[in-house]
Image (cartoon, rainbow, N blue to C red; front, side):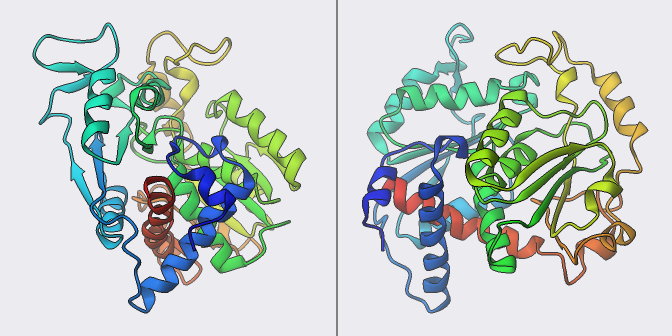
Length: 357
């Protein structure tokens, strides 16, 4: 199951963003995920990670990510350590150390590499001072120094494991994804503190599979330019199409998949590294909140779903009910959010089995 040239190319690798993988590698991960899901259903789970250890560091809250990684390690015969940053010397970038409260990431990564088989990290938002890209920088600093795989459990730019589960779910429900209209839409939330990771990773993932991608958001909620350029290049290579619209109703028309989710107005936050013409020097939360309140009508309703091609409704969860989405939508038969959440376990087991074995 796990041995071929593609599988061998993944062993010992980091997974920070799907942009670092090829279509063939993503297909192989998904093949293994489907196989592990089938084997779990009949009680035939291979213990390919017997006595392997994954160190998990959560700077942010987590339900699906924490439990799917921990359960996945257990089911494959390994063990996951939960290393709360507040319970250890906080890993710090060079120049940000504080005596007896922090420890340089270079040192932490090399120590953990001596004791276990993988390091997984979630960090975005408040722990980075809302400097967009700093969480990604911290994870890449771990990867630079670690001699074991480093896994991104969500930073401020990317959430690759959620995206793998998203594609897995779409394949289960739609089979062939080529030519299907995939809508990644902004949706209103009462909280403006939402990273860009999910929408960016969702359109990256869809661009590998020949989907017709529509990215919808109100003015001011642009995604990072390097992600948009990657998606455009991928569409040229793998087929499909890509468009940006600023009307939710227009986006939903004829859609096969809709994925309405809130994210912050990144242009009004500091960026690392600085991007000319994108981002600001200081966080402008007052303006961000004004943008959110101005666009309360970006809400997923049954009326919008009626415009689609009997689309499936997706969300990474937690969803802000009554704000991002109405109950009658998220609880409808066409909502696949629970399968999507469950597939986090299987997609991540595939990653763990291939990278840590």
